Image 1 (spheres, rainbow, N blue to C red):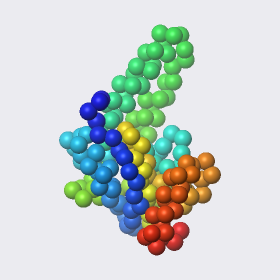
Image 2 (spheres, rainbow, N blue to C red):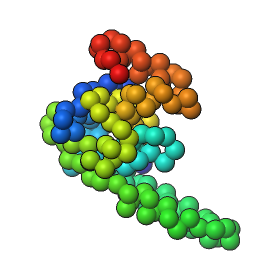
Image 3 (cartoon, rainbow, N blue to C red):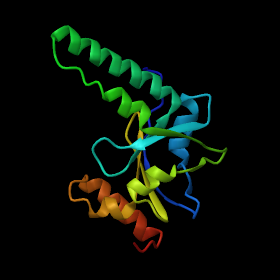
Length: 161
């Protein structure tokens, strides 16, 4: 899907008591250009202790990629990961967002990612990540540059974690 807008950039956003947060403008604009429906898909990141989100059109591309991967594995006689599609499509929730990008972080995923009063957003190309800043800053395996950006944003907004 060469004509897709990529998710680029970062931001620190406040989260209210109900779990509402605004998708940063650049990330929201990409989601709106990629899909006719103001809705994102939210799930756990496969490797990092954060959330991964994307627009609805990426779901179809992701399915097609998994399908091709399964077909190649079958052709080679390799073992097929029969759980990949279940993880990719069953362990997610759709979240509608309004004109200003506000959406409710699905409660299960908010709890799993330990997101409290603040959410750090980071573009990842086809998807974007949503971190609890405390988790990101404490994660020794996280990208040092990403941690530095998050720490800077927290300091510049006067956020005490």
